[in-house]
Image (tube, rainbow, N blue to C red; front, side):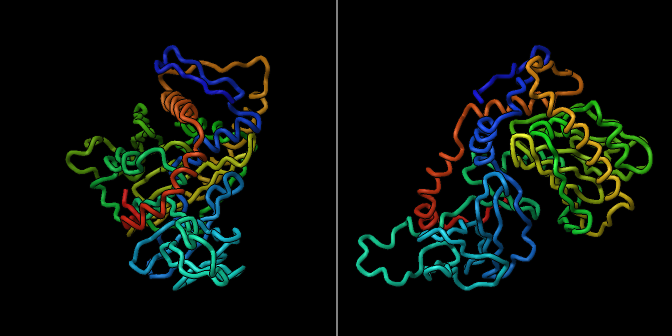
Length: 389
């Protein structure tokens, strides 16, 4: 799909044409131009505390499908490396292990835990061997509040992207989140990923949907606030919902805040409650297929609200049906993109403007190739491990 523009004034703006949501070419451009250059949550640091701890994973499964590896090196630095051997491309680690070296079982090439080359049999006489091309590329990795974010070729700084989130969460006594396995689930949606994000961002359905996630009562929503790489909506309790104890100097001091809903561009949603957090990620599987992942975390010393998991599944399924009903209309020859509600669709308008800007920058995959070509040289000169956003 060609690049597009969205008027910065929501009072005049029109939403993108439906071709944004259809076709293999548009899908591929979005994968390369957006997702190959975006920070995405990939794991937690749980179980990776000891030297040699290794966990393979796939970055954006069924889309970019990049085999990567989390490993704690001998200096105690948590790293994200390519999990593809630089000799013939075999996968190096295929399960969670404790390792003292990374060894490819195909031809025996070995790497140190920081990704640098260690040994390869039968290479005597090879000119200029080994070189930096024989090292495992290092992928940018950042830890934020126990969540690990990775990016193949990041276009923005994660610390800057989450700074407005930190402003809201600082001083709330949230020191750690514990992930719960039981409420976690994935939802397959027969619709384009951007339609799923729009549904999560628009404000028309908000009170009905989020009433179902509270017990009992209702919520009053503050107007959406946006920043360069995301947005936030603040929910105020009108009933008996648990509320945050907000410290002096907090932007919402004096309000009965029941939840914060954050969006980090492109597809990360954080719904933070006094008891914990729901992490919702939206993965683009195809032009008209999306996987939405829900992960639930409980704050230290807290317990999951009774019945919350069932209510979350119910509302997620309800949203799926609504979004899937929109996808066929995206192929309509008679629909050209509607107007925005200045009152309720500020976040959707902002999301579309970010989408347009990122697609205008271009090929994220090319950015990845350029950066990883020099990654090992930089890291061997300056030992950069996991950063804390």
